[in-house]
Picture 1 (spheres, rainbow, N blue to C red):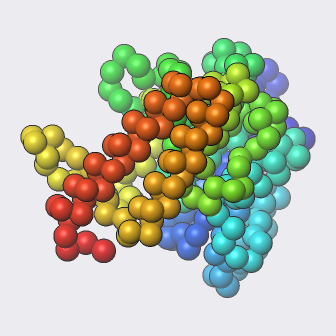
Picture 2: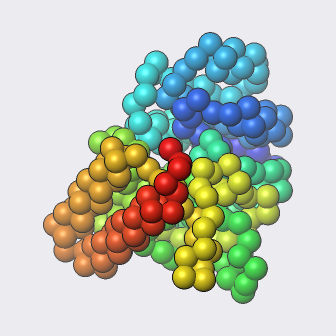
Length: 275
């Protein structure tokens, strides 16, 4: 099976989502993608009657709804999405967090990216992360990075299969970084490409903007249990990277952990009234 095929064109990516009580805007985005012919894969970590009703009423061949009936986490969800899309013949999967906004312009950009850039990355990269326009000369140009978040990640599924999908032992925190580091250990790279119109990973986030030493910073105060989970994930990633002898990867993880700790300290000081 091929997705969105036309003579002389590259197949469009499938779309993937791991959900946990999504807001109504998520369903609108699923309907948009389905109505425009995209294969859509949804792994529901918190199934409810409304979710079942909406998904079943779509009656579209290109909507694939999966659930295990309870919350198995992001690692299992991402692994299931990628493996299921690959088993159905999809070559690429574009993953979005449930609260990341996108438009048809975003999806068209992803298709155009594949048409123009796939020859450059198909053998060397496991994924390319699409991001909003940065407004500088780096837009529309894949730039390699060590670590990247999952939302907007365009997976090259034939290479992800060789890596072994995502690690189900990571529930939420560290899933994306573990994937990037494991791809690196298998000699695959991760790139970031800014310039995707309509891509918005900010508006629906629970972050609050504060000015710190003259700089605008987006902060979010996590509960102590979430902070502990994040720090444990960082420790696991650090140990794994050191065990592989990956000093650059280890430095990137430790640096990210330091930024996270500073960010949480600032959030707990400046956002005292937040939950």
